[in-house]
Structure formats: structure tokens, C-alpha cells
Image (tube, rainbow, N blue to C red; front, side, top):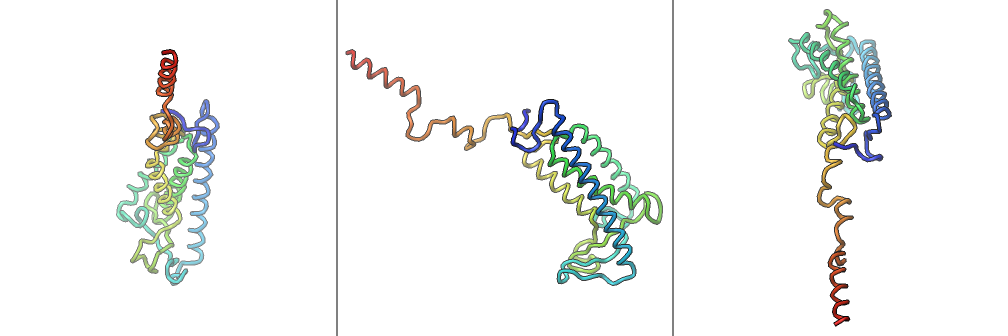
Length: 224
């Protein structure tokens, strides 16, 4: 597998120091911003939405309503909070291990979103009532209905997780690897690629071997 070109995303430089540092900075910065934004919105929701009717926004497209979720993202698995806490810890550990080989900035953004969202909901499960690792996650955003009957109530951490996973799927589908390389970068050029069209004879041009053969035939005819 060879590295992408100098202008490609996640270019791998000799030693991997440059892209690796940039990718780690993007990962850490994205995770920190997502985590801080999630904590801030939850604090604001607890301070302003408790014991209050849902707030209608954008003509009823979005409602702000305070709920406490004992399950995973989007209120799934409400009876197994501790299991999701352990899964979240495993995901955080996996991202930390992946960061050791990370050279791609887009992957740093993707993993940072997942990490920040995971930390946001994990903090609720560890530190909020009713107890450690079984705490209820604070949710506050509902779509098209004030009580989550159209779409489950969620929070900013859930949104960061979903966006991070969606970006990871896109990167995988387009062949971008976490080490900064890209699948197919060193393989044969696909049909219709610039490399192929440049090397192939243009329409109406005589291939070099045929041109030499015609010149030889003309010289022989003149000598005869």
C-alpha cells in the first residue's frame, strides 16, 4: 500500500510525524469541543427547562423538552444502562489505541466526534443520579413532536456520535485509511483515469511503432 499524493488528504510524510501530529490535534480538539458543548447544553437545559412546558422552535420542527434517559443513544436499551457504560469505556479505549497509528486528519475528525459524544454520555452515566454507571443521560431535543413520539429525544452527544460514525462510513467507502493512505493509490489506474488517458495514443495519432515501420518502408522503396 502506498501513500496518497502530496495534495491528497492525510498525506503520509517520511516518519509519519507531520500528519500524525495534525491528526491527533484534530482528534483531541474535536473531542474536547464536542464534550464541552454537550456539557454546556445539558447544564443550560437543566437550568431553564426543568418543570417547564416544551419550547417550540422553527414552527414545530424542533422542541426543547427536558428528559432523563436511562438507556443508550436515542433512548435505546433503557434497562441495561451499566452494559452501555462498559461498552462506552471499551469504545474510548479502542479510539485511544487507534490514535497511536492515526495519520489521517479526516479520520481524526471522525474519531474525535465519536470520542466527544461518548465522553458526554458516559459522564452522565457515571456522575448523575441514581448512581455510578447507572446514571440517567440528560436529553433535550425532540423533532416534530414535544414528547419524542416522532423521533426519540436526544442531546448534542448523540448528534456528535451519529455524525462521527456517518463520516467514518463515508471514509471507508471512499477508501481513505486511518494511516493516511488511500486504497488503490498504488494500484493500476482505473479506466478513464488521467493516468490511463495520458499514456494511451490519442484518437487520430499514429502509434510510435507504426510510424517507424512506415518510415522504413518508404526508405526501402526509395532505394529500390
